[in-house]
Length: 192
Image (cartoon, rainbow, N blue to C red; front, side, top):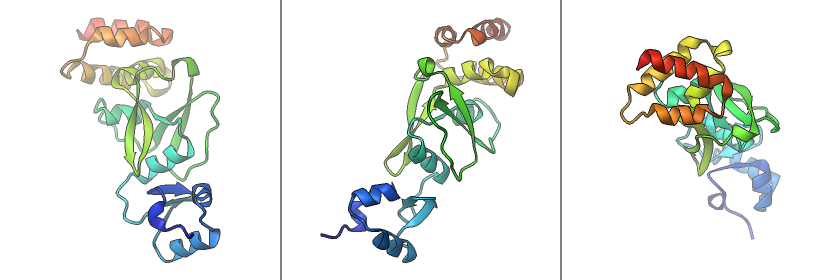
């Protein structure tokens, strides 16, 4: 029995199509007839799918991928920067995939990777990880030697201006990151 295109997920890999019984010939016929769009090498989506193609590709190639640093700060409206490159964290032991999307890959410690971690729906029944606003601030302070103190302090200032922000929650998360805890305490003393 032949598989119809409607039986496939909204976004899928070549391997997914094969596991559903779709032959290479059928797959390429659908692509050539514009019933499928190629998202990246070996990744297909239904035409007209309203998704962020970069995040969708990243979520398919690296299921553990998590938006972090400037990309996550922008998503939480804690910075005015519009990142040209997507900042993605992976657990330290996970291999970084090749993507068509412009990605700056970061390796984060596995023991702290799930702290203030949630998922963001990227469409096509796919999700990508997203660090919460408190974790993003901690990471900005932790990596301020690379990204600058201005970004970290600015994100903290913007977060404190939001309704419901609790410095004690931020400090609880910062306690797991010794390099960030002291500078966050010092900044909070100045800003509060």
